[in-house]
Image (cartoon, rainbow, N blue to C red; front, side, top):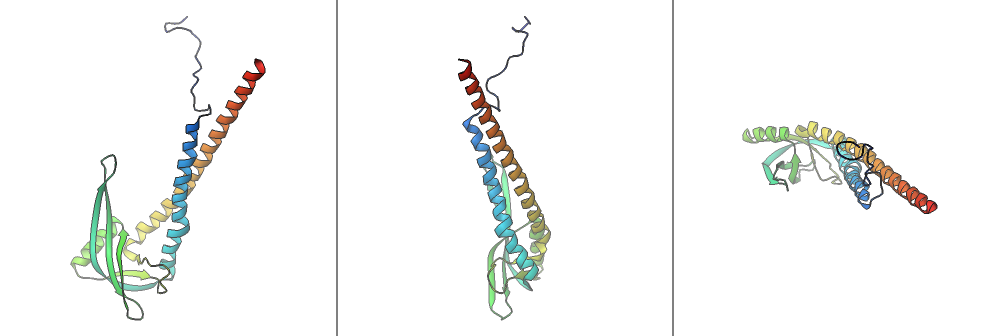
Amino acid sequence: MGIFGSHRKRRFKGTITEFSWWLLLLPIMGAGATALFGYMMLVTIPSEMHVLNHGVETKAEIVRVWRETSKDAKGRTNTSHFAQLAWQDQAGRPRRFDRLKIGLTAFRQLTDEKAAAQPTVIRYDPDGRHPTPFLMADRENRESDWGFAKWGVMGFGIFTLWSLWLMRRSWVRDRHSKLAAAASS
């Protein structure tokens, strides 16, 4: 006997490898995050890449640049930056995009250009299939977001597979222990 009771190690009953219904939350959360990044990869990014690679380049007037702040549940402040742009298409018709989300670097650059009354360079889809213009000043930020989305799909996909494997493993162990208990009685 040791100081705290038995000298043998106790085997705790509640381990992560025992089957539990809460394990279902792991693949559900992983699949949700994978679906979000997958949507970005399959819908948002190809649209932006199409406008970047095949769009018509023009100069746009910076109508307005602003930031919006909000607080999350933990009280942290989140800041988003936006721009409102106006330009003329190839046929001379006025076009406008009211709420283009931009990065901090582009926000600073557009603020300076607006103060100097200079237009900024954009690319837009003349067919109108992809309505969001691509702001060339924000190219670096958008390309880093594309890389982040690729890593997000991979990372959360692997996490989802791991959590499914963990859930199956715990279910199999639970079944084996119940069969062994039934066979011994």
